[in-house]
Amino acid sequence: MKPLISVIIPSYRYEKYIGAAIDCVAAQSYSNIELVIFDDCSPDNSMKVIHGRIQSEIIRARFGDRIIVHQNQKNMGAHETINLAIAASHGEYIAILNADDLFEPNRFSSMMRAMQDAKSLWAFSAVRCIGADGAPLHTEQAQTFEAIQNKIDGKRFIALSAVAENVAISTGNLLFARCLYDGIGGFKNYQYVHDYDFFLRACLYDEPVYVRDTAYCYRLHGENSFLSLHDAGVRENRVVWLDFYYAVQKGKIANSVILKNPAYADEFYKAVCAEGDKKRTLWKLARNPLTRLGLHALKSRYHME
Image (cartoon, rainbow, N blue to C red; front, side, top):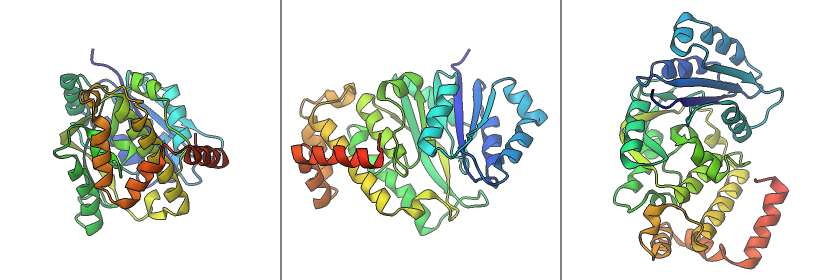
């Protein structure tokens, strides 16, 4: 039998979209899937929609007893909700689907095959932006998001394309082995960039596969969390960059693809410099003892672990 994939759907105030998210998991061509829905104490009708959907004959027939539904008693935040859901799941592999986004039907069949061929522990795919109605979106904002992945082309390893921004775009675009999750320690307490932080740490652990023949459908609907990005988001990004650059400089790398070139730090430095003076300054600050002390204090103050 094919390995079990646990699809984690963290849900918060998305009663308009959660039903479609469940349906797209049920529509996967890959058969062996566990559906795990954790609602983060939504104040809307999300739980009513969820229970209505999972009690349908189609969903019951598709998943059988491989359905887990839970509602947090208080709002925990995305990172903690995801970690709790993963702890409750049983799959050898884990995928996350944000409740307002969608998967294409061939997603897991395509990605599992690509991971097996590459002997990789994880993968992410192309991203296609959709609107509130689920139709393809061709706005300037959508094109900007999709263009982020152009940075991947021509790079020796994926991490070089991600030194300044998340080329996977979203937590929901990741499929990974449970042993990778355990190896890097799960999602950390970031409000805005828990996905980017996880992606960077995973890149240093194992080389991902970028799968182009399926897409993660990223919904832009005017209520996305990145639209409310403010000082907290800027602060979190800087912390993540400083930690990532420091890990590279200290050689905290298990990824055998990166390690094939003993001068990998030079490759990283060139990629960072290509992103401008601000990133180059952060690279230089990353190993500064005073910076490390200040970073430790900042993490303690904002509980960024």
